[in-house]
Image (cartoon, rainbow, N blue to C red; front, side):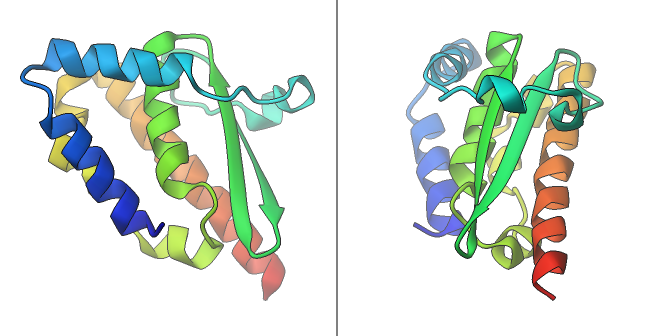
Length: 140
């Protein structure tokens, strides 16, 4: 699926819920089902700075696409990173670089997070884009 398709799928899922308590519960469930990062990748180099809680993001290249894995020590944060991984994992570096995370605004996530969690969300997106740029430059 394309990033656009995945974003639209998430927007549709969040439209299903009537209020933000239900959406938070959904995010928590997503966090619980997040495939965990392997222990050897849960290192300081993979720690995302700017998050209220600890979030580790690992990226590896498989053929032409980037595969992301992550973990966090707060369940809501795990739900947020799981959404981002769902959208950006298994995509090419160029596609990740060129695509905005506009689904975040469309589902209203950023405005329903505390300022520190919203900063963490921005830091997660920046880190994903960083990895994409890194892999893109390695191909140049």
